Length: 334
Image 1 (tube, rainbow, N blue to C red):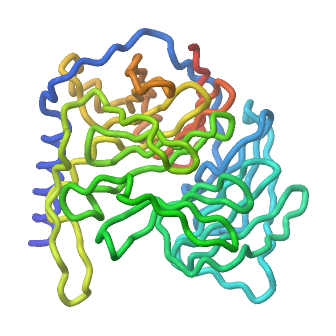
Image 2: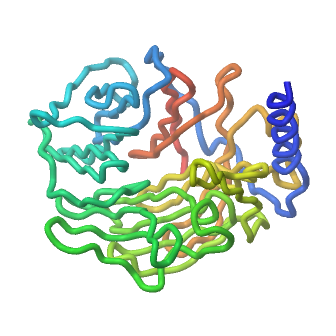
Image 3: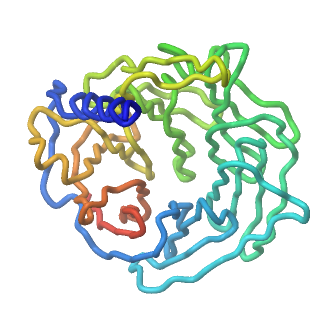
């Protein structure tokens, strides 16, 4: 009962943080995102792995070698099974990213990176990196951007790994430490091939970075909210030799993605010109120019029944969102 009560108190506190006046205004022009199709994929373990001009690829967190593909009209589905090298066993969370024809499989706990090129579905393990990572974006079959922990700086860093060569680590790190260097630097790493730009969006503060593929900062952008400093408290678990968040997480930027013109950020914070009863029924996406990081406008993605969006990506003017075990597409009119 005490555990349940503690969780409930944290939930209430976090809800108040997200719904109190946050000192900013959103611009919400109508009809920026038009609902189109819905597909029931039966399981909620799917995530968006990539897309081509004609197909969408969904990876599966519980079956890492299984990939579901569908058209943008969500009118047909096909299945693809990736083959691991003989004797390979992957441990921990495994993700697949597809930038057709290239297919990448990544296991951060093992520092494992695998690759194949369609139509071949047999994966080959890339030269051993021997370093754990927490997030990865492939730039090519031989080059990856990784987020990992660096003991010398006592914080998360971004590093560029080129196969069979040393890691390239900017010094000082491009990620800015505010509290503990771990949770306070946590965020989402995005990449778009056509622009050759990377974006790193912090989860707990109103900041994002735009970088080139050598991790040189092009500019530092600000989201429209006012949370400049991460609102978290970190506690040490002595017995487990681990750290954890000891206060309501205060997530500011929940999810993000990019295309060749825009950076899309799903914000958790309600603006001064929004009402709580309406805000709770949608997911808001704030849109920033990839060129200079300026805010342009926002749009809403409605909940699907009682299900909220849990991931999204933008391909070819189509926003693909996942709601539990449903794929929901929206046409972007800008």
